[in-house]
Every structure is written in structure tokens, then in C-alpha cells.
Length: 68
Image (cartoon, rainbow, N blue to C red):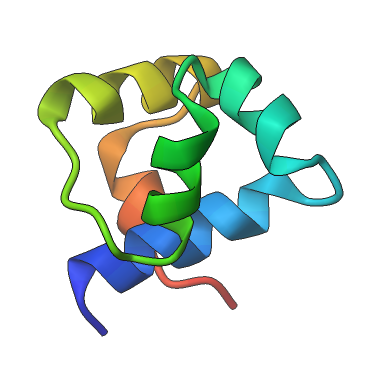
């Protein structure tokens, strides 16, 4: 599984029942960025990863770990 796919799977899983718009606001990113990340269609920057990690109160490995 590629890193982009792992990130997409983790972000989608953590979103739960929230809409993309609401989750994007929580993460501090645009809805279009979230949509592309969830579809593994966009490479992301370290700054965006840091923003997501702060919002989710998690560490980088958490965003790339396998979902069971």
C-alpha cells in the first residue's frame, strides 16, 4: 500500500460520520484539499501534515499506520 493510500485510509477512517466540509474545518485545511487527500490524489506538504496532526492530536506514524 502506498503512503498516499495509507494516509487517505487513515484520514477517512478518522473522519467518521462528519461531512468533508466539517472535517476540513476541524483540520484547518480546505475541503478540496481534504477530498484530494482522501482519494490519494494529492501529495501533501509537511506543513499540511503538521496542521492535521495538531488538529487530531496525533503523531506522524499514526497517520500512516495500518487500519485494522
